Length: 180
Image (cartoon, rainbow, N blue to C red; front, top):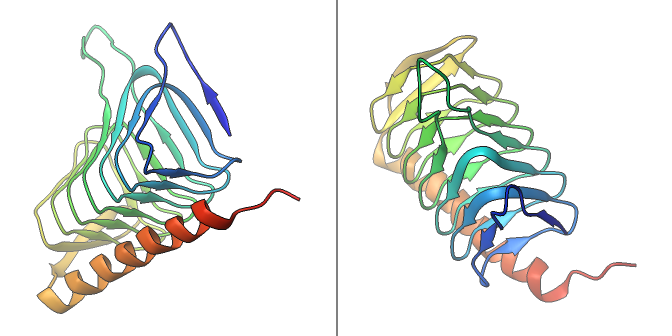
């Protein structure tokens, strides 16, 4: 796996996390317990920090980045992802906050300063524009993403079941992935 320090900061990866050998992790990145990072994911914490919570999965081809400090935003904006979050294939997350139990659908883009409240679902192919705040337990979709409805408990349980599947799948990969 390609893990690089940047500016003297070394990524911190919990020993129970699974990081596929084809992932790239750079700089001020913390990956929590039981998390999984899949093939061709790039996580670049070079100009700000990235935090990935426990049992969160970041699937194939996703790109995670941050925003740098500027005159208007002297701290810049980190990328913070809570626990038990599913980031599907080919997602771009840039300098946003994803709270616990969310799913970000395939090929979605979530932009700077967005807050995705707990147990939200961003539908596949959606674009969430800068600064949007999503209330918890809501479904958003479209280009740009718009609120569609509140998620019921059955739908939230489905999102969490997908996440639990990835926790188990990561354990299998960790135990039996052989480079040929």
